[in-house]
Length: 496
Image (tube, rainbow, N blue to C red; front, side):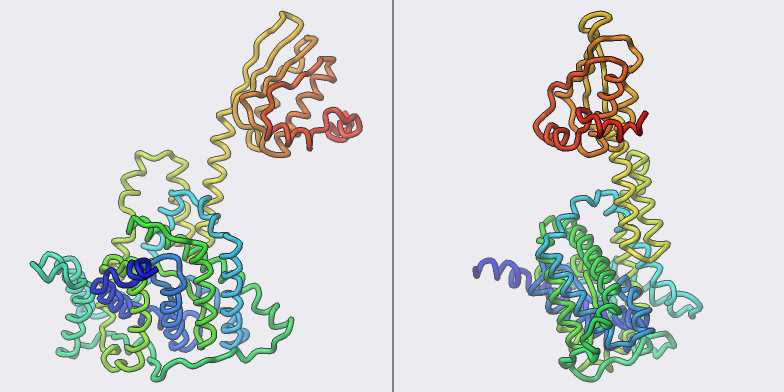
């Protein structure tokens, strides 16, 4: 037990501490921005980021992953806040947490195995683009000082690791933030800082039960929003966990992550925070800054709260250009540049799925819709491919008297028409044997196709024998086939 605790919490103290501080600094402006998007006070997003970060450190299934208030979730809250107010948002946050815990116990995270690698790549590339696009307002209609500071920040981020000895001891994003903040404070240049984003809270959060009527009407108001928040939150968290798994070459417990996200959102709602989920940008910052264990996530949450409450005067002086430089680094590091080169090597269907996922996600700013489109396209291409590899050959057993058809492959909704078309119903022959020993029947459509083949042969006066059905196919065929039921036959063939 102690060894497991040591591995999860104490095996990387320096890296986790420094990475947690970097993440906390990067979380502050984003939490404020997401609060503004949702139409609530900045402290709602900041308190949420603190609570979710701290709680998920203990309850999550992925070490080193950062969860907090996110833009994807904030976008879903706009209408609820506008029409019903903050209290209903807090109630929806609590219900979202409950749904996510239920999803964890139902092991819905196992559905991630249906998300193909091309969809994950598209998701990653779309997020990288969205992260970069989110920085553009800070780089539009500004003075040359902002561009100079941003360029200097990028130079520090990419150049500092090459400095002997200390280059690899201190995360370069942290050095970027500290140096540019010092320059900003010394020169007093007129550029936007964190303090310009919104007022930072001046007190610790307190327990806050949503002030809403506990009745069916309230449930009907918050239910649709809670369901959307649950789906988007879990989807983004599962996809982010998969990406961090790849970056760190480790595995994560995604069903535990579902439960952990639920507990964290309940904790957030009870101190006046909004719902949140895993953040790929901050998670990548954490990993690239040396954070690997749960300690980095815990420190990020604690440091965030301490900074905004007790060090607000200092934190408010951080120039936005420094954080823009950090987020550009995240965007560049997140994007899968290999996927561009692989467009020439990969099958067209794979490329279409990846590009469609990127296009829909960026176009709608909704990760759930983008991933859904990608998964749907991948499923359609897969079904079409499997359906096209079915083969049906035939040979005469006795010339003019008996023919045997050999079916090889998968028979299901995508291949059922080709299955029917492969038989010659007009051939004048006494008996047909259909050998199914190398075939598999998957669904009702496949069984109905078999029914049609048998019935059409019999209507031509040909005897039909089915042989070789494997056990699984035989179970489906025996239960749903109707070719031996005259009444059902007439109904299936439409009375013709």
